[in-house]
Amino acid sequence: MTRPLTAAQRRLIEAADPGTGRLRGTEAQLTALVKRGLAFRHPRPPHDHFLTPAGHRAREAQAQAEPSEPSEPQAPASTGGVFAARAGGEPLPPAAEGPARTREVRSAWQGMLELRRMTNPDASTDRPCAWERTHLVQAAALALEAAGHRPAGAAEGEDGYRVRETPQPDAVAVHAPDAPTLRACVETLEESGWQAGEYTEPRTRRRYVLASPRRV
Image: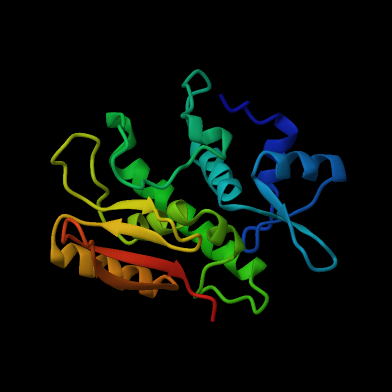
């Protein structure tokens, strides 16, 4: 279980620059946030620290929690770092649906765009960054969910997209229940900075999307 943030960590996140997510604090404080996945150290001098997508979500959760009654329990997302894009097929509690999930996904996508801006050498937000290239399934699933696509449910027959790993180290497969949905997934991924195309599985003859992060 993720440990709750300390009061000092909450203050540090709350004080981050609202536009860039830049953090100010001691080296020990910033290192602790990096270890929790809430911050990253910029690779170029002066090597400032910035909020990650999880850090942005933690700050948003703090802001939303401020008007709540002190005795009201907070969702796990309030500790940051627990958001996961839906690859399709996961069992989900009823509380994971609805407006709260929509806000989480929107915040995660905005955080991802900021991460692209801060870590791509040319500050580009129209193509995936290094983090996405090492978390292909999560990154592709976030792009799809943020665009409004519906992931498949855990029960058999619950239609929606499913993002899966492939033998190729730089590509994921996206499966959908019908041709229009599959085509819509291709369009979304291309608009999000991915190279995507439709292919046919040799044995089943089912169509699927093969997608990889665009580099230029």
